[in-house]
Image (cartoon, rainbow, N blue to C red):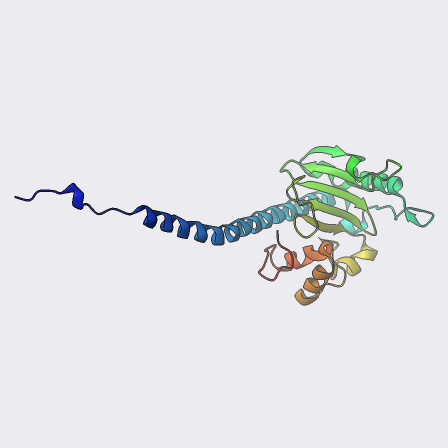
Length: 228
């Protein structure tokens, strides 16, 4: 007759359990940052694609009502004593936004003089638009109309090339310089006609990285210069 002997039952010792847990912890510590980084990249790619697609659609709808965007009325840059005039340029950006973009996008709030951007005189250079999907968009009157997009809203890091990306809507006389070719709605990067030049400009200034991402289908490749 077979008699089961509990005393002879196999079991892990405490030392073996601790060693196993230690190995699992080391593997997790090595792989978790990579997984988090990959997740951030995919999320950023999705948000950038959505913004570009939505804004392209809004511009197309606006063109049906207001004519070609290259011919939209954009006020020239205003300066006082050769210094960028925040108040005047902000008002120009607001007029442009209200006429050409506001009716065609989904937004929650428009801040016409954002407190966090104000200078010592209480004047911000941009307006700020909170979009319905959580994206924050600054609209600025430059050589073109600048759209500076924070894809995760007010969450950190709030830095160019990481969660803030630069787009422009250019009048016809600026489009070739800023966008290249025949486009006038594009990612901002002057003279970035090849991927190599776009990457070089991205390295020199994070505000120019949007063109590199656009060339890469909005994906953050392994050689992208900045960590999200």
